[in-house]
Length: 160
Image 1 (cartoon, helix red, strand yellow):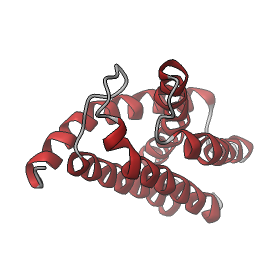
Image 2: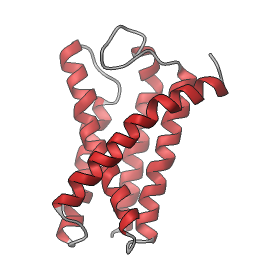
Image 3: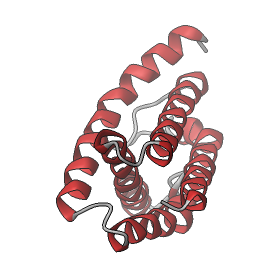
């Protein structure tokens, strides 16, 4: 795996999460079925934790490319971040007719960069479609389940 692609993945998810960290807590205060209200401290804790997990997945795969487990988690993050750009960011923006924080970096960074990494992994015979689909589903579900727990922990660490 080309190390620069792993760096681009980390850069893309970091910039995406920074965009969300700046604007999403305030945006979440409006009534929406896409996001329950979240405080800045809750969101910042969760987004930092998930960013660290993304980095761990990327560098674990880079340094242990023979590990199927490391590969599956990394692939899952790639697919989950592509899916995340569409739902909730794009869908929320369209339905609410108001910009959902994270859309710009999701569309301009996460989708193209993660798609390039996936394309390169397919080209180098590092993965098959079943791995992409299953890993995206499993990692995506784990992240979705983890987010409310992280919000709760983040609220207790630094209550707003």
